[in-house]
Structures are given as C-alpha cells and as structure tokens.
Image 1 (spheres, helix red, strand yellow):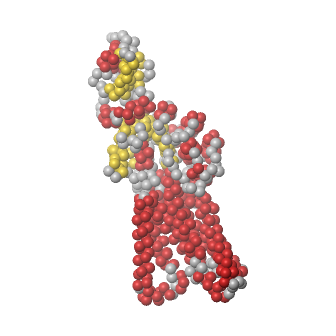
Image 2 (cartoon, chains in turn cyan, yellow; image 1 turned 45 degrees about the vertical axis):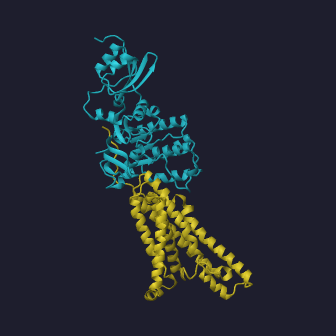
Image 3 (tube, chains in turn blue, brown; image 1 turned 180 degrees about the vertical axis):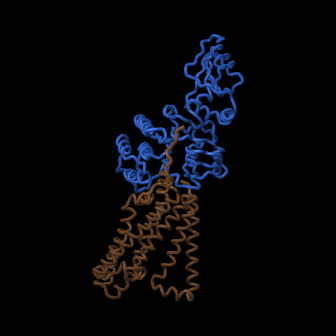
Length: 324
Length: 250
C-alpha cells in the first residue's frame, strides 16, 4: 500500500481535543491542500503524520508502514515547520550544508537555484533571518530534499508576491520533475492563501474544529456548497429544503450561500426562477466553513449517500425561462 | 493511480550518520571551543600564579607554591558548564531540525551520542597535547601545574580518562536537562534540578557515613576516586534522557 493512510486519529492536549476521529487516505503522487481556519488542527495533523508529536489514538501509515513500529520510514518525509527552529550557532549556509546528509535524493541544483532566486543570505545566522527568509529557507530545503512525502506548513508566510510566485513555479517544477507518475512526489501543503494556491491543489483535506469536513478532489470540493443569486423569493424557492448559511441583500437582490451539491433539478428550478447559481471558490468555502462552524453539517452528507453531486461551473446563470 | 517510490526502509547508508553531521554542523563550537577553554584555563592559571607570586614576594615560585598548584581544579570547573550548554542545545534545537529532516528519535540520539563522544575525545586529546607541553616546558616555565594535577591524576592515561569522563558527564547532564525542558517544560527542569541536587547531597552524605567501609576500595583509585561516581552519573543521565527522548514531542 502506498500513500499515507490516517485512521481514527485523535489528538488531545490534556482534556482539550485538537483532532477528533480523523480518517483519510492521501493518495501518492498528488498535491494535497490541507485547509481550514486558524486553530482547526492543521499543523497538529501534520505533526502527527510525521510523528513530531504523538497521537492520542489512531494510526498513521506511510506506504503501509506505521512509523510507531518502524520509525526509519520517516526518512521518506520532509516537514519543515512554520515555526521551525534552527541551532543557534548555525548560519543559513550551515543548514543547507547539513540538510543533504539526510536525503540521498537531495538535488544540489535545485538548492542552488532557489538560493539564488530567493536571494538567501548564506552568511546570516539562522536565528536572525526575517520571517520571509525563514519561509524561503524552508521551501528550499523541502523542494531540494527530494523527499517522497514533502510537507509544507504555511510555506509562504512573510513572502512577497514575487517570492510566492517563485514558490508556486518551483513547486510545480519539483512535482513535474518525475519522468513518470510512478516516481512522482507527494506534496501536502497547509495554506491560508487558498485562492492563490488553489490552482496547484489536486486534492483537498478540509478541517473544522479538529474534525474532517471533506477529503477529495478540488472538483468535488466545489460541490459542497453553492451561491444562489437573484430575487429574494426566487432564491428562497430554489434553496427550499436546503441549509442556507449566509444571506446578503443588496436592494432587491439576495445572495445566499447554500450547502450541498447541485442536482440537475436544482439547475432546472434555478433557471425557471431566474436565479444564478455559482460555485464557491475554495477560499470562500474555507471561510464559510470556519465562520459558521459547518464541519458537522458538511461532513454528514459527504459521508452519507447523497445523490451524485454535479460540479458547478461559474456563470451557470439561468436564462430565466422554464427549461421544459 | 500513481505511486510514490518506496525506497527500502533505512536505505541511507552514509559514512557519517546524518544526525552526527547535524551535531558537527558547527565544528568550531562543538570541537574547538572545549580545547580553547582548556588553553584559557592554562593561561589564567599562569596569570594567577604570577599574581600570587608577586603578592607573596615568592617569584620565582617556591617549591611550596609549585606543589600547591597540584590542587588546581580549573580544568574540572571550567569544562562542564560550557559542555552542559552544548548538550542542552543539541537536544533541543538539533532535535527539532533532525525530526523535520526525517530522522527518527533513536537515530537522533545515536548520532548525537557519537557527537558527544567526538567532542570528548577531541577535548581529551587536547588535554594530552597540553600535558605534553606542560612537561616539555617544565610546568609552563613557572613551575605551575594545570593539567597534571591531583584531581585529573598523573600521567597520560589517567588525565585522558579524567577529561573524557568530565566531558561526557557535562554533555549528558546538559542533554538530560535539555530533554526534560523539551518534554516536560521549564517547571520540571527546576523540580529535577532540586531532586538532582538532593540526590548528590545524599550520595556525599552516604560516602561520609560509610567512609571507613569505602576507604579501602576508593584508596586503590588514588586521586581518581571520583571517576566511578561521575561515570555512573553519566550513565544514569544518558539513560534517562534517552528514555525521555523517545517520548519527546517537537
């Protein structure tokens, strides 16, 4: 079995639950986005995954191997934490001299290129680095490591737009560097800049209050909720029987965020009522889930046997005519 | 479905364990500094001897003062403080980075222990070189003894062993408290420090209480009677910090 399999993962600090019954399969050779509001347990999940901390219950398997049983499997991982600490005496250059010893797959060419592109000051002590430089260093190590499972925890903090563009570009280069799918690396990216990173993500893991809300492709994530825009009564008609989590009025026009996938019948009803349906972006979805604490409501239908969801496409506005 | 390459578990077979490379990342700090401290102890001892000679009007030093320098414990007092800092830092900052780079806790401990041994061997070798210089210069031209002193023993093997044990003791004691800090927090460092101090006082009290029974076996060790106790403490702190390290979060 390849990939990362998390089963029934629970993490508590004292009596405070941080992660509750997380079960998810992270397919290999994909770019996964770990999304959720602040404090939902993203970093804790990553820490449990790489055994930086210990789960209260549950198991994590990396390529079918439990690191608790055979910890050498952790050599396949690279997880530079958002608050990574470095030895006080180390200069940035020292860190980059030491890191290759850990990875037989280390690519010095990638490291040299990123050092130049991020303009990393090799002579500066690691503890004196700015927030952005620390992020750039973390990205450099992570991408150059060649680790089969590379975890990036808020990798862009402190980076300006130009540096973030370099990161996105280099991530895709590292991801696409494999000659074939069989040797493609797996990236797990925890991020707040969801919209900016959305195009990179192939799979999404969405957390809320320590619980798994959704795990699947980005296309499937777009079916978790949708926006309905039109006349007040018409929107209410379309959303009848559904959970409306947010309503905003602008004059006679009402915009509502409605949970659940959109079926063909919904499209038909919307078209008939003159209501425009559009998908939420990933960023909007994360914001809505976090703001309204929707974890339980979204997780339930997803795990259940709801009708096959139909992805929305932007601009699926109805013509206002009866489709029949 | 795609699949990520699954290299054989533990396939890294580098000549030097990665975690040892991490420990040796700043060689000057972990290898050269202790030797420099020894050299500074020699320099300061010479300065103090000259000042004493000037103050007592016994310069050049009299035979009485020259023999008095055999009680100089500068090396024993000078090294452990710095080495405790090295041990504590190694088990904190290095630990975090090692695990981020895919190391297991056990591999980290193994590599760091090799590093502690390297620091101790280099420092003990530096003491050997200083001892050779001390003998060649007739005790630093002034007749003062810094390396070949009572507490370290006389002769190369005993001095080597004493410095080696002192270094390992300082490093592992630092690692012990460093691991407690990382695993249990600052409050437990205070609690453990108090407990450790009480245990040491109790040990000393027991030695005094049982001095007659212990006199014969300890006398056979001469001035190096303290070595078994330091070696035992080193083993205890190393074992305890190993066990704590296995359960330590980043």
